[in-house]
Image (tube, rainbow, N blue to C red; front, side):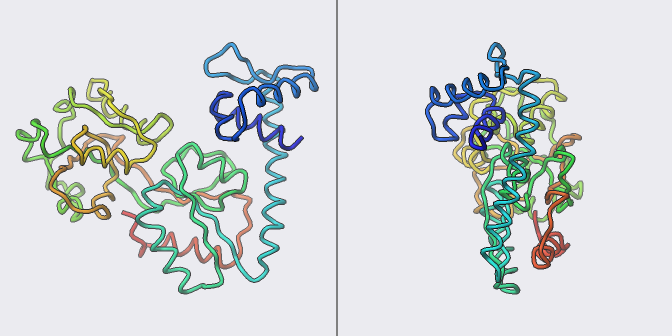
Length: 317
């Protein structure tokens, strides 16, 4: 019964049988057969297969709501007994996007464990669509994320106010007439985009440029589309990626322009093959959050870790 609920909940999350089957490592016919069996047992359809993507029927909404409650209890029980096996060790699972898993969190974790060697901290690289589910099912204790529209039972603390810049290959012809707006790595590191010493670029200069975006569902993508819309155009998207670092590498290779967080200039290797532009738009800044479940009971060491991460001394930029 539990496995059936997990499978149906995954279909609901992925909005389709094909993607859910891949994530669950089962065949699509087997998954479809299992759902039909459950629907037969309860005497009602769970999914409306006439919509694209598939959606829940009223009976399905009730089923998924009950499944969420039952699965949460299961995951809490699993977590309890998992932690019980580590009687002398506190285990903390923290998830974040690839950028923070590569550049900031490993250093923070190493520093914290020097103070608390009895604490085991597991780092999980997550996509935007995975953050809330990992918190709700107990797979992650903490999540570093930029989204504020989390479920009601998730709380958050602001870590850093980050700014979104436009990154363009230095070889692009349009850069020749934008010298007064362009910034190098060093300019961004010293905060030229914050102090107003460099004017914001008019996005219309890039109306015809090839854009590299993250896939739908990412907060960065939503903001990118809003920024372009407020400039009066729809971006010409030539490629989509799951992680910002991948899109930035394509910029370095001359593949197009991309929206990136300002912290990238502090961590990736310096190069003259890219220039940055400040954007004067309400969607060009956002809060980086540390999220956790409100009902989560943290150990004293875990609370120390949260205090450590939220300290002003931590440089998340």
